[in-house]
Length: 93
Image (cartoon, rainbow, N blue to C red; front, top):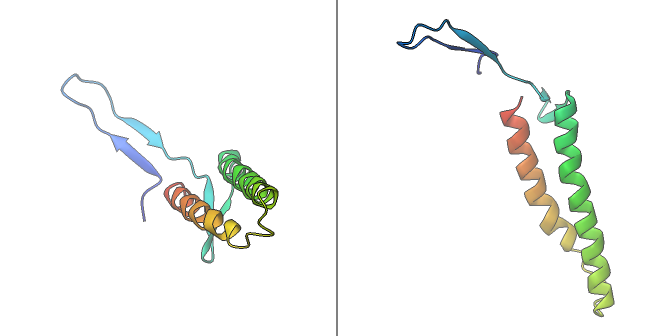
């Protein structure tokens, strides 16, 4: 577990120490991460909205090209999005 505060100690130039606070964007709840900061919600929506739009436009394009349905398309796009979001949430929790 990482500390919530990191200290930068003075170098040879004589400046005093400075505390750097980490921002917590996600809280761990059971085995999942939940946004608890507006930046966490922004990351969540910045990932969900383009993924859903890509799925819908991809399905429409395949139907237009003559394929009746591509049921595997959402899974191909959702798994990398969930993995990417999990990595970000773990880093900022």
